[in-house]
Length: 169
Image 1 (cartoon, rainbow, N blue to C red):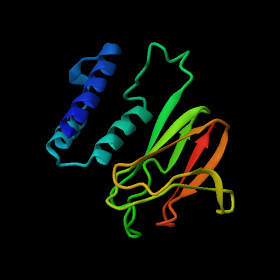
Image 2: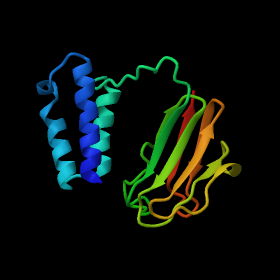
Image 3: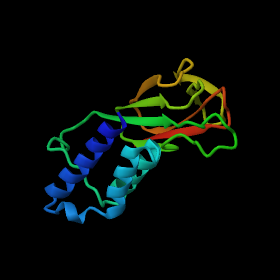
């Protein structure tokens, strides 16, 4: 699975660069090394994906869909990384504040070794009945579609020091 994901993401990078009339030689060596290290298990999936995210956010890697102008439905993912339950860990939600357009379905994925849940909160931190998951065991997913703009806060009631937010534009 790791090698397959690594090859898929690396292929997207190559197609993106070639679509912009660049050669594979223009891909920075650190990107190639990260793909190799990820495939060999030397870096985590989160570290590898954060490197790709950096490239996308800084317009080094631009991924365009031929249908992007008419594309109205978007999906997004929030990862609950391994170590998220440890109060001393830096295993925050990835991303900590997800910014999305309206009508986006967000999927939370528990990659931690212990159960978590997602509890929506109002502006003062009180749990509200908007999007609330059952306990999510390792590998479990929870989905919610955000229809209206606003800032939506959430936390894990099992590990209340873990908070996140979704900003819908």
